[in-house]
Length: 59
Image 1 (cartoon, rainbow, N blue to C red):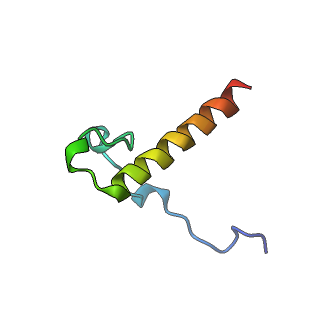
Image 2 (image 1 turned 120 degrees about the horizontal axis):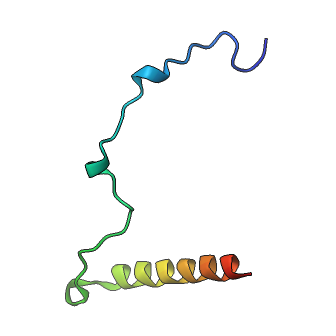
């Protein structure tokens, strides 16, 4: 038997997310005056990751 044989897939019952509830994953509300060390560290990691992606795509 193959991988999918014997398994029932009911794709009609998968949940659908309305377009108005989908987000791009970016937080727009951010206040640097309320940021703690962990927030600043996470922001620096995110910026570094974005830079790596830009460098990889430009090659």
